[in-house]
Image 1 (cartoon, one colour):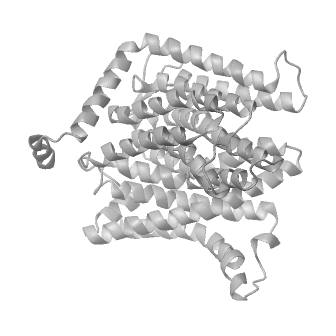
Image 2 (cartoon, one colour; image 1 turned 60 degrees about the vertical axis):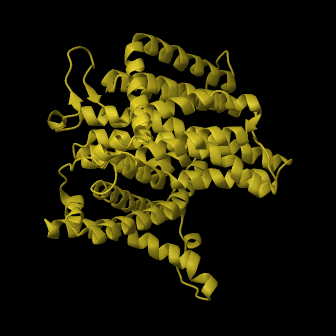
Length: 456
């Protein structure tokens, strides 16, 4: 066990070494007076994509092992929340850069464009997370070899009705995400992302984390491989290993994903893909890759519930922290408080993203997602992106422009989501009741409840 686990750890670390050396040669050594022959600038975009992509792959495995190991000492939901934040840290960095430039160049065309790009990148990442992440992982989970042995996969009669059962403990995440989604519909009416948006959205996430932290550490789940090996360590050594893996993997992903995304952008631009389209879709897809790799790893270990929980947790922190903190970054760059403004097209992007989230949550309120529901999410996402691209490139003619197209799909998502909510209204009420009990228990001042939880 220990030898195979050490080999796996060594292989994951080995995947990251070329990037670490390249990053040191490009970032650390030149300011110290050293002039190494190979730097990021000396490599072509294809080589940068290859080296940084391997580092992202290795870092994603290290993140997954750290999160699984941490489940021995902290609530699983908290371990997954940490994993989700680290996995999407590059997305925060990219959006923060655009928000910063919007503040620096406030009042100029460059500042306006930067504000729009911040929203475009953020909405693109969020829609990718559901349209490709939730849908693709659900399909992979049900259709992969060995799915029959996965306790989360349910065989049901009917056309494409096999489904994944989601842990009911995720009700907390679903309800908080639903609250953030409802608020997101109102964001464009204020002319931009402002302090009220920050207070509401960041407040939702802070309350969520407080509830999670006050939860119990779940009874041990049988782990294998690297997590089982690390969990066998004495507690101080185990905690040290988890922190080291989180920090190293987080630093890797934070430094490697931006060059990975930029390299893909350069390759795409070189073959004629519009730069704005690359920033909204290709760059976010690259920044989401660590998380998708982690989830694929968990699903392949028949830990489908943990994998899907990680996706939902990532969506929650992107839909709250990511949006809410953009106005802070923008104001710091501006030197005073300022609203992060965006144009009407980006307002439509936010409405579409919120509507997609609304529909996806309506699917999950009965704690299941079937093959046909996953296909529906995927087809709607791909259709909207392809049609918008074709319109922008004048490949097709439609009776609507690209902005109106976003509103049409917003309406489709809202109608479908509302129909599902009506049909599943009893499940929705049960979801709210379960979450209310969870929050009440977490913040209860009743000493008997606290003692009972500790004894349990």
